[in-house]
Length: 141
Image (cartoon, rainbow, N blue to C red; front, top):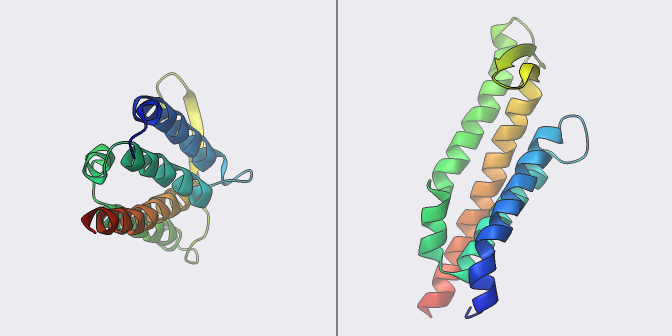
């Protein structure tokens, strides 16, 4: 695509979209949103980058391959389920704890957020993998 406006504004729009995707992820286990919608928005941000520039530039911006992102997401989701078993409860039982974060103090975290992170990574990886493949084939023809 040869749009000068899109080329220059895509970085700012991508940053805003990625911030919103993280906010959706963090609010997901308490409110509408979560890993699925956040992952879609994150993938859309990098697809915008690919359309404004090119797929190679978007792949560099993502920094890890979509396939690796899918594998990390599946492993994270499995880990969130296994934590319940580790504590002697059924698979995918929610476990909660507090973490001390600099500047935020004690923050309550749990396995639902970890599961949502896994979904986020899988959704973003799958959408990016499919879309990047389609864009690369389109440019090859």
